[in-house]
Image (cartoon, rainbow, N blue to C red):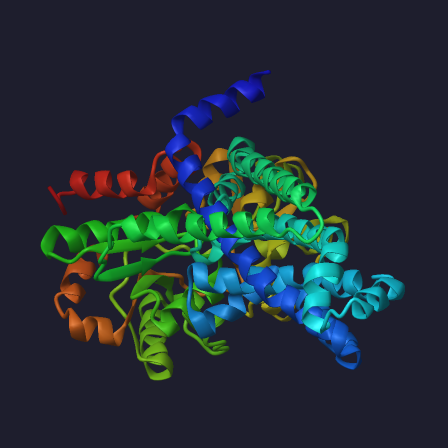
Length: 509
């Protein structure tokens, strides 16, 4: 009962966010379903007449459905940017197979004797399709539509990682903060939405009788109106700049610092698109121009983006190397960094450290065959992460489990794993009282944070450089750790936390 009460309290506190996310999810799902229906049903009809192409075309849609959703969403960014467009394309691709296959199967399974009777009554191919074949096949077609709708509603939660919004925003907040109430606040409405759509489609199917398509036409018309009418009355946001941010509290906090500084000293309107997943997603968004800047780190540029193997471990030299190489490769400007470093680290519980006496990463060598490591997906593939670990430290762990960054500390405390990667500014280090081991072989390069900005943005607004570099050499590791804690564990908004920090230190008034 206590958990239910916490969920109710959170809903009352965040109901505006819940309703806006539900509305976004509803529109995203409806648009994707309608496009899938308008593609798959006519294509299924055509394939029922051209059977020699059916196996190939249906096979192609089956392959589309096997592509991991995150991979497809990330891939689409390079062609259509972030936001709802790549999400709709990906969701439509996932929805095609059930509708196409069921339409093709439903029409093919019409009794040949019925077709012959219709032909004998003087019906041509089109009249026979509309008056006989489609009405008979309609239950099978609608079953495919209902299956696709459930697929769309579920998969659409991942669209939050590319800035498409929806109930996935709430789920990602919950995963990021290891907060089950936030996860349920997104998951329960998503499940109810799927059930609601299934009910509406089932009622529509039952209302269709004989050759009457009126219920289906009415439903499609209502859905189109539901999609088209609200944007006609929406106000144009008219943002001059868009600042991106990776998943987690810190990128969103710093992005909002940049926003407040810019809006304090200029007339520019700034939008923050936070929670865009990992480095690959947000960097590609910068490449295609969907965002103008985002917080990046010198070590990530060198080791994660440019895959540089020979980099300096002296902070200033590493920053300058990252600044020069990223400009040479992409014409992005890496401005002056802040004081803190959000470097990678290897962490264990204080209890484990006391029992074993480990102080450095090298001290883990004698225990390597008994330890399970929990590493993030990004860390495990980086040369300045686990990919370069064995070469530098000379050993590997017996078992390595990949997991989301928000789950690793809980897995460590619950003893499902004994070693994790962490960030030096992570609020979970404070929350769970974890011990960071010394990187005695210097696996992790310096990670100084600074704005990574498109050159054309700085040419258009040259005043941005001096505004953003007010934070150069400012914001300590302890300060950013405290700000992360306020967002992650005290549920304060990143925008408010950023504004309070800037006001407290006299940057804005």
